Length: 224
Image (cartoon, rainbow, N blue to C red; front, side, top):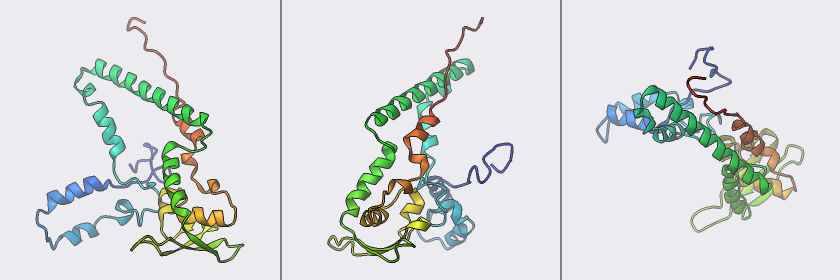
């Protein structure tokens, strides 16, 4: 990972741990409910690589390697094939996935969506929640807000501080997912500011389209 030849060194890539594998390793190492050495084991793991709190927003909330595991599951049958058949199978599977994603992206574009389905699902949930927040503006130039969440039974009624110019909300969701949390959305709404400029470019459909823009060409006969 640290080799310059690989191309994934910082800032192009960041080394993070999958918490699912971390938990599995912990289970193999310690088999008792109360283990005095556990704290020492955890202290040797860099929290920047294993937690969202110290991640610095590099993993966009992704805590596992499920994306890689999904691919492993998709090629489970192909892995048993001879090498030529294996490569051919993988080629057509990748082509099929690219084609499906392109169709999905264009469908979303037809509905005039600016952002991906994933981002829209998160925004829809947080916009609904934002409608119940109470907002106070503490400095129009600095764009600092105090947001009090709506009381729901025993939950809610908490205060969060939003600093729009610095892209900070003390709930840390904005910094983690790079999508404005409900407190940011409520703050923007209170002064008539569009929140879309605070959404990371990686969630834009135009960039998702670029991911799957690669072209595939039919495989020729072996004699050709």
